[in-house]
Length: 214
Image (cartoon, rainbow, N blue to C red; front, side, top):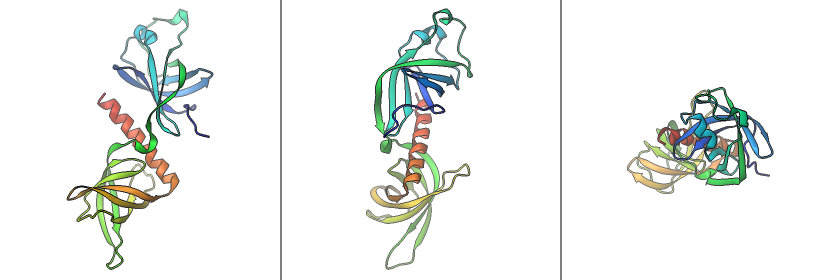
């Protein structure tokens, strides 16, 4: 069964439409609500935040999802103070079902990750190329630095994720030629745990990029 709602410990975005997005972590959940620890200071004034129609955006087993709702604030606390601090917890009362914004396999992010590619040719020795992934999703990546690529080339790869994480290895096929050294590589053989790691990485990085340029 697919996990459609956020779980305790998940990070998500609390969004004031067309204004700001605030990073938060789920600390508790119940029928119709999530308690959210604010990891950033909202710039929206407290009274307005408490009156506004809000949204949360999060990742579930299907992709990026959204739910609408409002802050559930006790009457005696409404409008008190100048703002919420980074360690404050608010209760988000949601309504309706999650709305899928983008399927997980289509979430893409701009990256700059070292990549080792090995071209296997039945008539020649293997050729190893050091390149970079500059765009990443759960289904493939845009690669810069591959010399003389051809459509249909099958390549073995090792993608370095950094921060001490094990490299993701697998096979891919060249399905698009953009420039003389920039190609679209579609994954043809990647272990499911590694594919999930790539999906999560693409989601986290795309989320940060959306917030940075919002």
